[in-house]
Amino acid sequence: MAAAATSASVQAMGTAIPAPTPLSTLPPVNRYTLRELKIQNILQNPRLRHEVLFEPKLEFRPNSSGQLAEAKQRAAQQYWSAVEQNLHGESGATTITMLVIELREIVAEMAEDTGKPELAQHATDLRERLDDARVQQQLLRNTFDVGAAISVLGDTMLVLAPAERHSAAIARIGVCVACGRMVRGLRLAFDVLEGIKIDIANSSIDMYREYMRATAVAFERSHFALAVRRGAVAGLAASREWWQRALADARGSGASADAVFFEAARELVLDDGVPLPALFRMDDVRIAAMRREAERLSVAGTVFLSFMQFLQAAARNQSQTKLQTPEFRTAIGRVDHGLLAAECLSMLPEACTVRWTEPLRANVATPGVSAAVPGVPGEVTLSRLVADLLCLACRALGRTVLPAEAAILERTLLRAARYECPLREVVEERVNAALRLHTNSLADTRTKAHGTECDSMPQGAMDALQRAQLHFLQPALSALSMRIHAVLAHHWLVYKLFYASPKVSAEAASVVIS
Image (cartoon, rainbow, N blue to C red; front, side, top):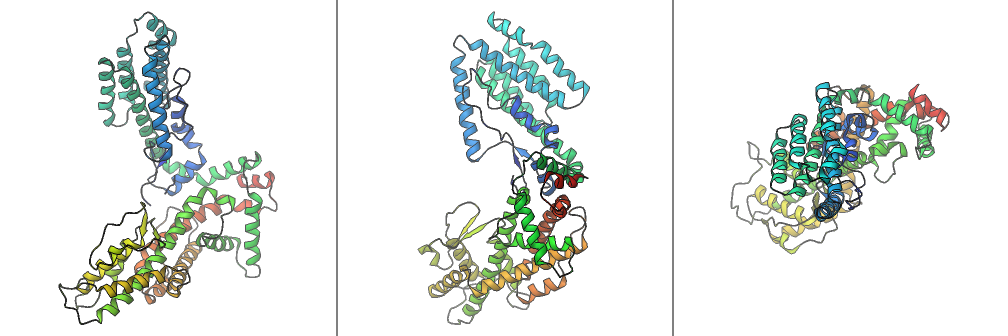
């Protein structure tokens, strides 16, 4: 779930996909897979509740991409193809019975889960009208009206559906069955029910979001203590060793346990070469994203300063006639560093990575031409970056960039790509220093991870960025500092008593819920 910034989502139907043997198994979407989306299960899901705390737009959605989605689609296609063949055999009536009863149970359970007596009555009515034995008997006598059964189910589905967009699909189910496309209608019914269940689950998350946030610390403490008692938590000793090392490093400083934790954990987040202790496993994906964001901002700063050096050198070349009015100028005609910095930052969108090792393409050396360079989604290639910067240089200079100048820009970026590049080292130092100052300020002044206004970056950090011409990174660095603090503050509230206990044991973990 990454999640994940942009709208986060939790992939629904993440359980193992049934093997495609329709005579003995249920379809891929069935009452058991949909039970994952019951509000009772959501409220007892530690991973989901943890994600709700950090992702304000968290929601379920069907698997629509990736390997799991492809496997699910293949299984569904095989299943329903086999059902189509089976309908014409001796066990066709049994198959129809199983599918109709499964639809009935899904709809009935959805009605019962609402907690509303008037809707729960629909479950009782459905089970009476579509009784297992009665349906089987009518099918054997060739008197079962599948269309009527689908109509009864559809009426209840319409009542349960939280969005009007499902009404047209529910109507198509009846049309398919009436036209003799039995399998198509049944398959559509299961798909529609999955969509309705996901909508209901998302509505439940919205309804209980504030409750889950308010009780997050107590819930995670309790879940952790119970998991330790069952022996279901790995890596406790290693987590305790990390904490003991942090205490040892701070010995003699007079720092409080809170200060020691926030400093040690912050350095853990900023050092992407250090593995995370086991107790951070709930945030491993989130911390990896924070590390990538810090690297992206360092790269953006390095690219901008390298580009400005190139632009200043190119501006001294007076032999070229300006073909257009230079862009990115202030009212008095000077270069507007802020606008150029914003352009450079936009070339490296959030969550992207730069592929420095990609060989440069010949066409990027054509000044003023931003060639379409294919790449992996979320990845910025060196060719793409050089091409975009050349276009930006043409606009800023008001003329075409010479091939020799383009070659200089390429070499400048290649030098900046090396980790031992002095400029890159300076930028990374400034970025990390700003993050340290801001997260320290947050840890000193905030007692909660959520619910208060965003504190501004300390003036000292902003002044340092200004002197380094990296002030354009301040908003993104402030946002990243807030994300880091939120994760660390919540972690400390949950596990502080565990870290403070003298030994790693179920008894020590029990203090977490005391």
